[in-house]
Image (cartoon, rainbow, N blue to C red; front, top):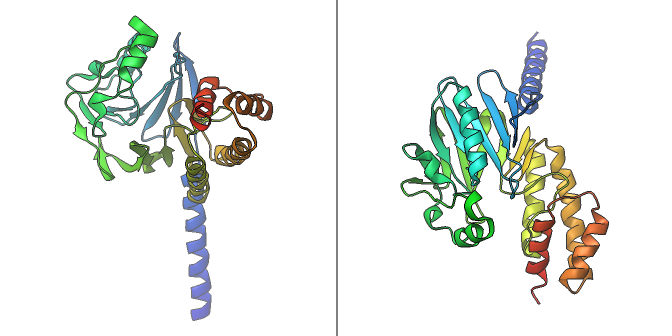
Length: 283
């Protein structure tokens, strides 16, 4: 009888574990809403909604909104005025206040959030890229950066009832969001090039993708692509391994760029590829 109870208990435990795993990795099918300039992708998790704004801006920025029962939390502002206006109109339709803004890699357009609680890395109010972007894009670009903000530190912060785990990355932070089993990092993307500056960085990113696979996140979020499922990790590992091979087998930026385009003919993000080429072959 005791043995039977033990076996029965183990079966119940196995069912519970499997059930939790299934719940953890289930991602609701997103609803796409064309806003005119950009597209909003809405994931309904029941107790909260996750909105992804695909800005289709000159830099292909992505903005994330977490909608709880009481408020909106925004992750990564968009810096282009037309997108700012469109996003504000959309948020107004949700009928809830935008109380909190989390900035990691994209501090520009921050004067749109005066009076909101802003969380950002130390130094976010003095980003050296501002002058170059302002000159490049002119009046369509909002160069404002946060003035008053809470400095993000490594660790866990609860904002609007949602727990965020902040992990240092590239002078800013990655963000783990357990409530939707998602992980945000600056650049991953499917069928798009990444900004890569060294073999060490490539190796670190491969290790990160393998960690994603181990943890089996439901969504992988990045600043320049719509959310992707965990399958994107395997795609990126293959991409990164191939990139490392092509860095070693070419001796100038032009040859490397051409070899990458042959190896990945359907990839977008040529501007990111150009940045990588210049980093690996500066002369």
